[in-house]
Structures are given as C-alpha cells and as structure tokens.
Image 1 (cartoon, rainbow, N blue to C red):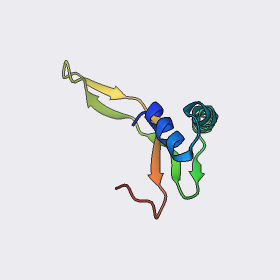
Image 2 (cartoon, rainbow, N blue to C red; image 1 turned 90 degrees about the vertical axis):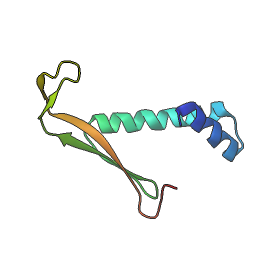
Image 3 (cartoon, helix red, strand yellow; image 1 turned 45 degrees about the vertical axis):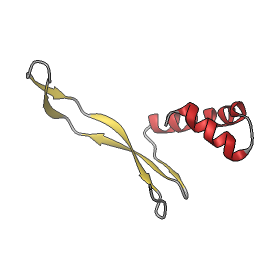
Image 4 (tube, rainbow, N blue to C red; image 1 turned 135 degrees about the horizontal axis):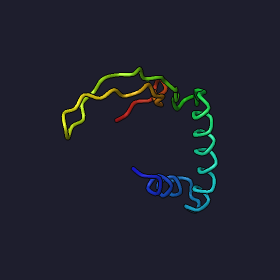
Length: 88
C-alpha cells in the first residue's frame, strides 16, 4: 500500500476528505523522519516502535562482477508491531 492508498482508506473510514487526512498525516511523518534521523527511537503505544539500529561493516559481493566489496557500517530503522496487534 502506498501513501495515496493509505490516505484514501483513512479518509473513507473517518468520513473526511483525502486532503484533510494528507494535511494531517504529512507533519506526523515528517516529525517521525526527523526524530529517527537524529538517532532517537519512537514508541507509539498500541501501534508499535521504530528503533534505529547500527548494522556493522560487512563483506559482500557485487552481483554483476562477483567482486568482493566491503559495505560500511550504517544505520537502519526497524519497526516492531505493538504486542496484541497481529498482521492478518
């Protein structure tokens, strides 16, 4: 599901316009991105948590050439669904 589909579905459920949902959702998403970019974690009670993790440097292969390369250490975001919520 992409952002447009999400706003369409949410607008239907809430009985409001898609523009209203998009105007409300955009600042929330921007704030989440800013907080995570700063290296901080976010927990939304009843929804889940976003955690910034550091992946260690590792060796890999270039799929085209087979050449051995070293991937540098990097930060990634992991999402964990809150307890009680299940993906169906």
